[in-house]
Image (tube, rainbow, N blue to C red; front, side):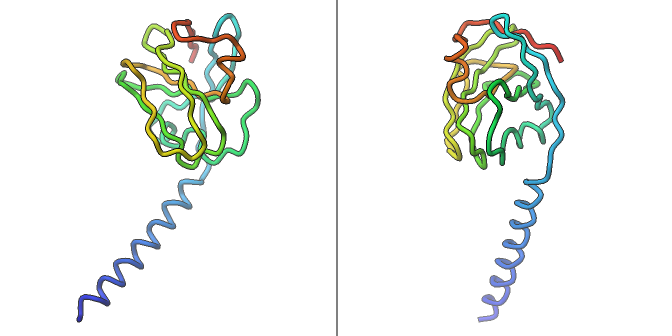
Length: 148
């Protein structure tokens, strides 16, 4: 069986490549800042504009300050979805259309690989600590203004 050493080597190479990818995934990613206003409350949040920034999101964070969050930008607009791979903080996500109207607010559980999607085409998603939207009386249909 000459095939077994080849398969063994391929498995070893795959394991090394996977370990390298996981190591790179934990490298710091720089995020810009965005100022948003929700129900007359101004907030400065991290801004994930690029594909690499959106892919990283809030992964590997152990905590998030009370009024901290991340705004994700989708261009072109789409029926976006989020998941919580390598994310340790319970979050809520508000999906926001091109007019700044919140279309959905949904809970996201730590490390849950279930895709949680918007019900409509959206331009933004805003992740905040779980319960933040309810505690701040932010509801579906409310308007968010975004200043980049």
